[in-house]
Length: 176
Image (cartoon, rainbow, N blue to C red; front, side):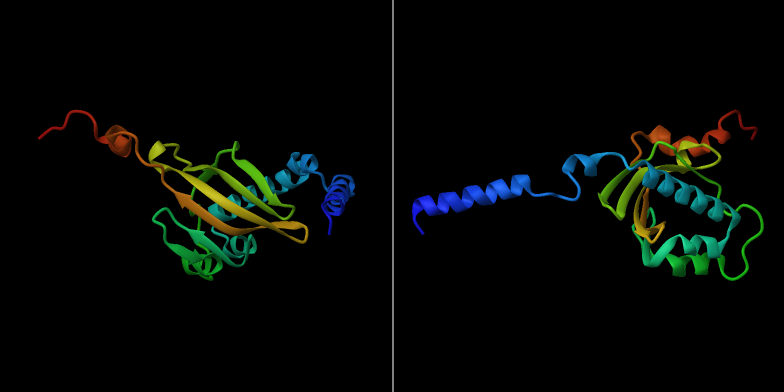
């Protein structure tokens, strides 16, 4: 092919790419998807409510088969198997784990059906000693958003004082 022919083909190919009717533009893909964000937040709230109740069936229903949970010590578990092990067939009475997820978690979409949520969670007692971070991978299966993976970790303590905060109740005068 002559140099002119190669340039003409390349130029026409470039023009086709520019003018091709794409289903979704980059600008549209980056716009917030309010309905999906709200559905993911709702699913997260339902998950936390099921955790507080100790409802193994409801917890497992929030996971895809084979979904993985990684705890703060980097141990990985099949989420549904772990739920069954922790809660068994008889759900415990009362609140199992009092957890609060901060409402300002970030959600970003990798594809139309995959989203990553990052945020912080804490024990409901509100101390920083019970605070941790999480990353959740949500996948859309039909109309529902389900957990594919959930990773929790404790932030590194920035000072010895924050490590000892849980022992603050011991401060004071001790009678010996």
